[in-house]
View 1 (cartoon, rainbow, N blue to C red):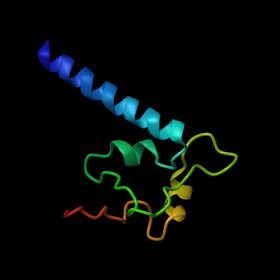
View 2 (view 1 turned 135 degrees about the vertical axis):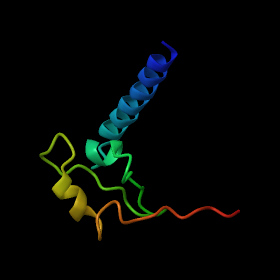
View 3 (view 1 turned 90 degrees about the horizontal axis):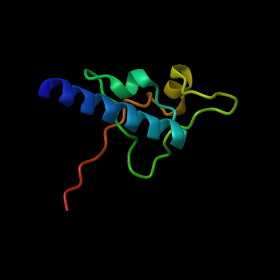
View 4 (view 1 turned 90 degrees about the vertical axis):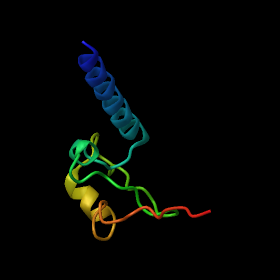
Length: 82
């Protein structure tokens, strides 16, 4: 019963966080967001987050890969050392 509660809690968090991504209009597909083997990494500080193209309602993989050079997952967020 506790295990089911933990899974329900994690599933709710995952769906809620992806809902935030959709509301903000970021061009991040569900596959990129939920992938445990190749998780999405944000662009470097100061770089623009790719947005959903005009005329589309949901994020598209083709637009996500062309929005930033090398694709959205090729960037690694620098670690703050201060």
